Length: 192
Image (cartoon, rainbow, N blue to C red; front, side):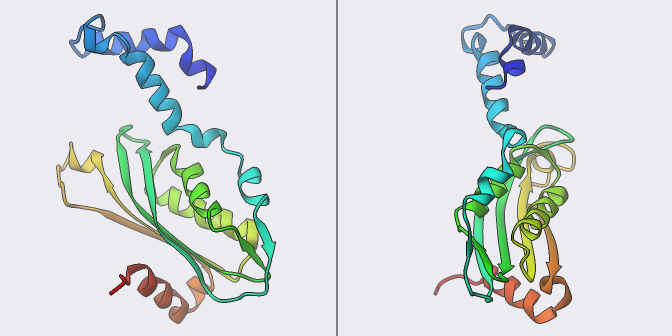
């Protein structure tokens, strides 16, 4: 846990918040809530400490392959930076290798590194795509995120069945309609 979140002053802040909400922080169910909340918040924002160099450098391989590589349906859980409420969904990532491929497990790790921060879905989508483009320098990168936002579902407009879809396309995914269409078709195709 980050030292500043585990400090007694942070726990006191959460106790004060509970009191201002009209709760009794000494109540049995709430006595350890400040500690539990701070541990959860530390985990949910652990992406700030993620070492992208360590995540990506250890699994970059020279391979002569130039067809599309897709990792789809990567679970995404993040916190909306405007309301500190969760948003969650699926992320689909594709790239066209140009002499280098990335170990497949590193793509979900990259998604986690950026989603475990205070975020907006649009920035999250862009950060994933641009980081892959920078690190593996493929012919193109495509990222699509489909997510449901509790800030829209539980409060505000209260639309429980709405979702947001964002995309960021680079290189061939932006320039070539056929490449983009192939990616979009493959991420939505389901096994028969």
